[in-house]
Length: 391
Image 1 (cartoon, rainbow, N blue to C red):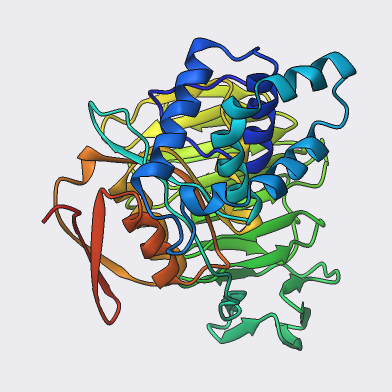
Image 2 (cartoon, rainbow, N blue to C red):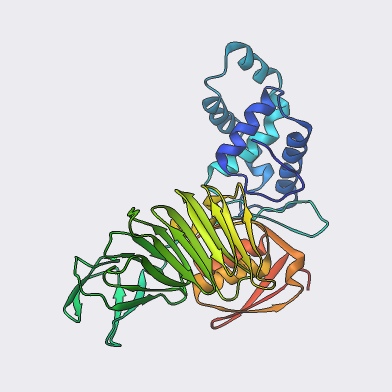
């Protein structure tokens, strides 16, 4: 595990345990040791979760070390002797482990040219309302409201369509008409096309598709963001049209992100092989690669070794950020929580790294972000105003 102390990042429990073991054994690098010291300092500077702070945790010394010994039970006898010898040295790190064991979420933020991380904690876990909702527009123009709570049966020009607890199915028909599924902000939905290709549609997105693929190619049109698991059929290529770009596949798993308010259109490949075409340029992707089309200059680029987990985090009910400016973060939040965002600061100066779970309510998420001590928020109905923390 490589840590860069100058780059904010999530420090999850298992990561910390591994670092602690290396620290106990004297195997940490200078960078890792400095990271741990900075991390500990954040405990001393802040009152964690209101009632939890460093001094309070140190009073639980015996219990903390029981946990550490359990984590280190596979150490050999020589290493265990080493643990006892450096007992005072690891006490402060043990306190930090105790905090992580309470299930806290770590979030880091910084301003450009600054390197000191600040922690924030998501204390509660609420169950927000169901977000599996969509509208299906039939070829007749009729609109059907979809949700995950019921079984629905309907037809379009004699074509049977069913909604089975949050997934639309086309049980097989040779009749081909166009349907469009769209999701509002704060919602997502799942679709199985007539060829058994699976599509997950993210918030504020749409997909237009034929009810049967009777042509020489399978073609759909997407706005917003969607994840595909394409059924293989070499005789009938699958194509996704995204504005002026086309993604061509035979059978693969990939994510397309093409929101109008994003700077780039991104195609991220998880499995298989795809070709991405734009104007006279094209790139061929292998797993863990990404095609990026920049809206400003219409340049298509190939990016290697991307974090596919970050690109598909929304499928798991997560948002992952790696040195993202606050405007990018709030743009994603606006889709999840159906809010409008106003800025009273230079949004590009605030960089965020971390993970947000969809199970948290909007007030909890804003509290997490305020805990970075870089921004604060005021709300008025659906409008959220972002301000500098020090104003």
